[in-house]
Length: 255
Ligand SMILES: [Zn+2]
Image (cartoon, rainbow, N blue to C red):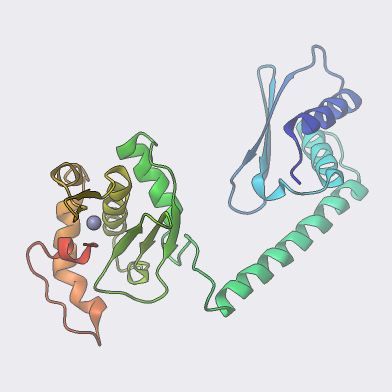
């Protein structure tokens, strides 16, 4: 069960009064924020105290939020933080990190577990969000984003409308692959969400003229194509030789 913002406001307000009791009382803005790791920030500007709490603590017990509020506010007002209060916080963080680690270990051990959006080099969620802002006004609803389980060098991306998912070939999660190539594949799959497959007289139309028109908007399409044509052979070792040709990227994208 997640703690309510209203409940947090009450905790912070009471503590502001008991620690400093400034006149007038500052306004208060509290929000959860998707920091990487457990990070919490507080800032006082003009008459607004802005608190950003790591969303990893959304489900933390109220005692933890109380301790965190005391730590943040005492730091803000330059007061000493009692050792007992920091202890509550430290203990909880340690536990959480251990739990987090065991989840990660389970992920790497269990082969059947779907790989998440975070790869070794590229985070699909981050790429999706960025492209969504730049090219789609943030209007594409976020599907499940996963890396493929195997190194598929002949299909780079796939959108599955039944499962509402985009899968990107794990072979692209490689520091030798430029980011714009991964973005290019993601952009193509996102267009499949924007332009759902049409069926006319029993025939499927996925890459409609409107789709192809939009596809040209990606700023690095030509660069991606050139890079794939030049380098892709290195990534398909042991498989049927993939020779770079003009329009090659198009063929590697889903059909
Ligand atoms: Zn396609």
